Image 1 (cartoon, helix red, strand yellow):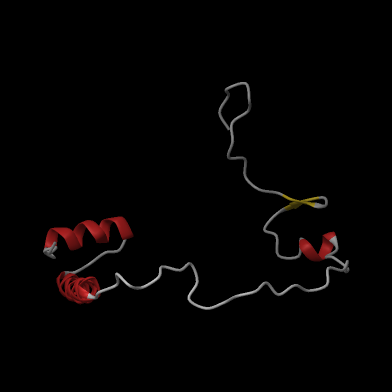
Image 2 (cartoon, helix red, strand yellow; image 1 turned 135 degrees about the vertical axis):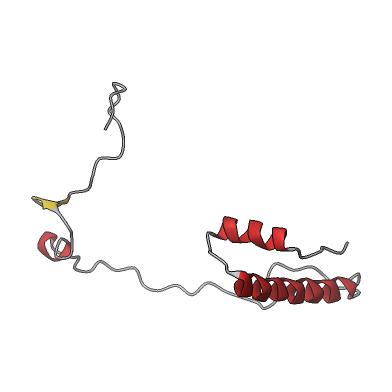
Length: 104
């Protein structure tokens, strides 16, 4: 199945990706899409019937480290770069309404 890379398709992808494109950017992106789709087409032509599907291509093993307690940050150190703090806590704007249905 051949996908045609049109200006409309590039514009839709740009909207979804939240990027602004001018005419030269659109042409450049269109060319990138064509190259990607051509490469995928080449991959689809490969005979893979005898290839055993695998989760990992190389054998892996977990590497564990010793779990030991260590000194954590003090409240003062943790709050050093906080925009606002209230005592030993980070202070952030309320974004959730009260359970009673009132607004924030």
